[in-house]
Amino acid sequence: MKSLDLLAHDLKKPDRFSLATREKWLTLACIKMTMDAMTLPELRITVLPDSADHRGSSYQTGKAWIDFLGSADDAHIATILPGAIRGNHFHVRRREVIAVLHLDAWRVAWDRGAGTAVTVREFAGEGAVLLEVDPLASHAIGNTGQAPLWIIGLSNEAFDAEAPDSLPRQVLPVPLT
Image (cartoon, rainbow, N blue to C red; front, side):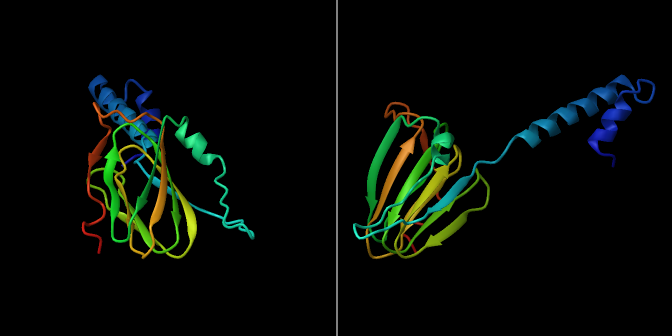
C-alpha cells in the first residue's frame, strides 16, 4: 500500500484516478492528518528535587505546570489517610495540577481515556511530586503507607456544583490493595 504522501502526489494527476476515487483518498488523508494531530490524554509526573536545609524540606516546582494550567481558577487542599484513595474520576474540560507531599509509600494510577490501559506508579519515602492531568485522563491517588499524604490541587476552571466536571472511572481498586 502506498503512503499517503505518494497517493497525494498521484491524486494531482486528474487522468490517473476517477473523481470519486480522488475524493475518497482526500477524505482518508484528511482523517489521517486529524488523527496525527490528536493526542490521547495523559498524566505527567515530575519528581521535585528537595533543597532541604536545617529548617526542613523545600521543593521548587518550576514553571512548566503554570504553562500547562494556563490559569489557576480553583484550588483545594486535602489529606489522604493510610489505606484511602482520592480520585477514580476524570474531568471533561478541566486541566488539573496536583502537588503530592509524602512521608511514606503511595501510588498514582491513570488511564489515557475510556477503554485504555491503566498505568500505576509507586512511590516510597519522603518527597514531593507534581502531577499534570489532562482532561479525560482518569486518575487516582492511593495512600499505601502509614502516614497521611497531603495534596494541593489546582484547576484551570472553577468548581461548579451545579455543573460538575468530574465523572467516575475507576483506575485504582477500592478498597486499596
